[in-house]
Length: 269
Image (cartoon, rainbow, N blue to C red):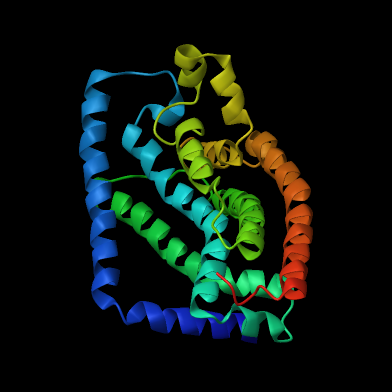
C-alpha cells in the first residue's frame, strides 16, 4: 500500500498543478449532463418503448456513460502509464526496483481510477441534484458490477500494456475496443435494436463484449431495482470473462517485461 500511495501522491501533485483543467473537467461533466437531459426530453415526448430501461432515456444514459468512462479507464490506464514512463525515461528505473508486477499494475493505474471514480460520481450527483433522477436499487450491487466489468477491461488493458512494453507503441485495437463498446453494448440505444436494424450478427458482437453485461446489470439494479437473484446471469458472465482473462493477461505482461529487460529495450520508446 505504501508503494501504491507513492504513485498516487506523485500523480496527484502533477494533476493539481493544472487547476484550471480540473475545474473545466467538472464544468464539462455538468454541460454533458444538461445536454443529455434536454435531448432526452425530445425522445421522451416523441417515442415510447416497452423496454423498462429506456422509458426514461436520460436515466438510461446517466447510468451508462459515466461507467463506460470507468471501464475504459481500466482498459487504457496501464498502457498510458507505461508510455508516459517510457517517454520520460523512467520505466527502466521503476522496473529495476524491488516492486512486483501486480503492485506495479495497481499503482500505475490507481490515480486514473481515483479520477474516474470522482467523475462518475459527478454524473450521478448532477443527475440527482439538478434533474430529479431517482436511483431505485442497491448501490453496493451496482458497485459489484462496476468492479467486475472494470477488472475485465483492466485485464484487456494489461494485454495492451504488454504490447506497449515490447513494441513501444500503443495497442492498435484500443480505438476499436472503445468505439465498439460504446456502439454495441447499449450505451446510447437498446441492444435489441441491433438485431432489428442491423441483423443478428451485430447482436452477437454485443454478446461478446463485457460492457454489455456490465451496463445491463447496473441498469437493472439502479433503474429497475432488481435484486441479486435477478441479475445473477450477467454477474456470472462477467466472472467467466474475468477468470479467463486476468491470469492470462498477467502471464503475458510478465513475459513482456522479462523480454524487454533481456533485450535492454526498457529505455527505448
